[in-house]
Image 1: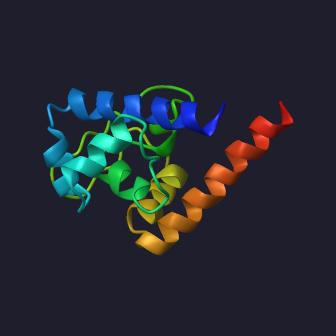
Image 2: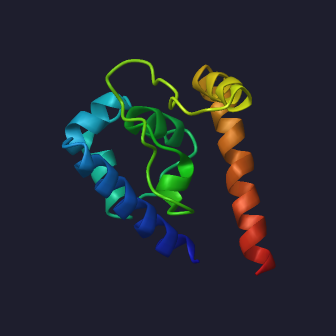
Image 3: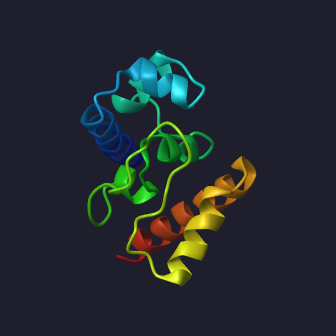
Amino acid sequence: MRDEDQKKEMGRNLARLRNQRGWTGEKLAEMISSNAGHVSQMENGVRGIGAKVMPKICKALGITPNDLYGVVGGESENKPSGGELAPPADLSPEKKLLWDSIVKMTDDEALEMLTDYRRGIRDREAKR
């Protein structure tokens, strides 16, 4: 998939997920410490969803990067409530530990994880 197509697809997914919550672009912008113009540009594929803002979007919407990329499955069932995200009730103890470590990540740690994740997706696509 070309970068331009990926930006547009991710933007459509972001708009859909935001709208499912009944949020305005302004509300999402506030949740991620940005502005409505930036959110609009991401949703319209004018700007890509950068590695620095993606963890903030995921945390605010209670989703994973896969939900934005449109990879496998739908959105997380764990909707945001304005506070800390609670793990789904059916997690195994091992997955609960993983959940807890991800939720507690600093922005720098999340950025590193997402950079590695994106690199992995690009490597898989290049092999196709």
